[in-house]
Length: 169
Ligand SMILES: [Zn+2]
Image 1 (cartoon, helix red, strand yellow):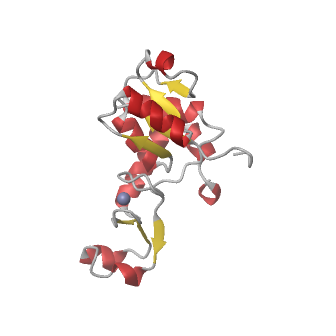
Image 2 (cartoon, helix red, strand yellow):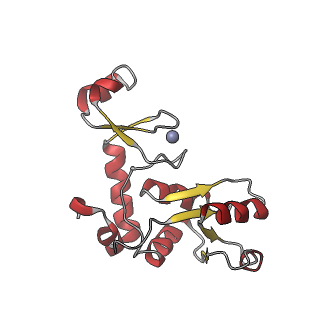
Image 3 (tube, protein in one colour):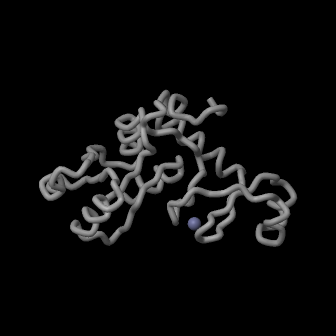
């Protein structure tokens, strides 16, 4: 990713819940609500300088020149591939680096801090933890993460490797 490109900031219409979740899983900044009125979505896009992702072919007229990408694929996996391909110069994949509920970056937490806050079998087997600074949810690398990475390779193919962050390549 070129140094000059600012991080991608997105906002998705109410039809793109599952796509939004996938994008957050790969670390992208995506605002999503399932009860947007068009005006609210456009206002927030304008206020926060976000690119709009939409399935609504009428939204471009209403968006009055705001940056917008009309998603063509019908299903979440295809939509994810389409969006990652379209924005590939600006997307750097970091799996589970962001809370999928709160859309904020997770922070690393030292193991002693999570004692008693994760199930005992997790405490015994896992050494690395991250937490959401907003909702407090704790995440750990485990089979879930591996499963998601397998799915991502399957969905994104070559795009996955080329958009991966740093040392994981
Ligand atoms: Zn959270």
